[in-house]
Length: 76
Length: 352
Image (cartoon, rainbow over all chains, first blue to last red; front, side):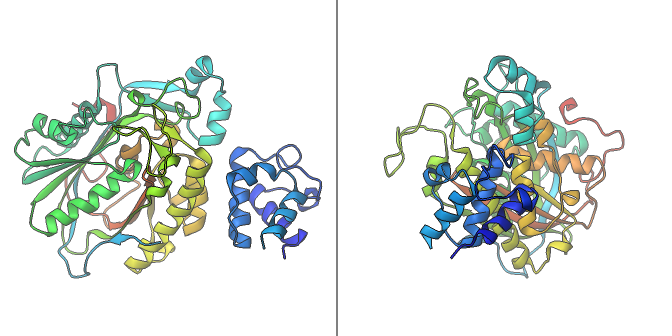
């Protein structure tokens, strides 16, 4: 089961943001400053860390930290 | 990953015995795209690392670029083509589907009669070509092989498509592959392809669609997100695989020469095989993605400025349409006239 802390660790590494900014409500692009390639790198980081494949279509819908936690939970 | 690879550890030593490169004179900056497409120079640079690229003249085609790279090679080493009896041209922008661009180049550099064929693995074509050339030499089919990577991508990319137009440039490189002293030259290659990735990067020809039904557009098409993911993973995996096969660690590598598509891909892939950017040859900022020409252009540049020297351990990694990938290890032999720094380092475009 993916925990918030596991997902947060990947986000901090891939987006290079301060851990305290990674709240459940934080949006990757607007709040955490991710550009288009960083969001791809983040998705890849989540795929690698949790052993899942995230389709393009699903990736488009994952816009917040909580959405990532929920999505990964639903895939495991 | 299932991939083809090189031969036994007891084979004869074969490697690069001459190298030349050419980039057309016309520089196209990001500002030019900003002026005519819905994009910005800053956006292009931050997403790709590209600041400018070269475009061929209106009447300058891939065979012309390839010939210019061979002439650059000859200007450095006039005897370099002796014993060459095969020519391989890696390109996705051939002058024509037939005759082959390899035959057109051979005809213009005094190699009429040599075996000549084009190789179609897109951006991984030059590294694929080196491996094919090694095979031809080791099998005794050829004494030496001229491997050319040449592209006039500006002719085949839709210059009104902001997703692809900004990425590609024109250029060429040429290498002679032949016997080198023992302990030098090519060590191992890892080659592979996955046709299921066709829809991610394509250029149509006789068929309107790919097996499975994917309809191709009229010009070069690319799914940037898919290519990015594929590239980062396959560069990392094939780089690690070829190092393991050679019995090397990432710390043994003096220089990585990666296919130059996007600085962000190079950075993410390097992280995966553990070689720092300080030991990676990068020129994507000045040439963009020249497909099969990126590796020889980067190699030529790092020889000219003295970074790559005799005896150093090199790692070549490339990926491209196919989807395809190719990685190779080699111990650089600097014993021939064109394989080191040129005293008055002339820019590649000032070739004869």
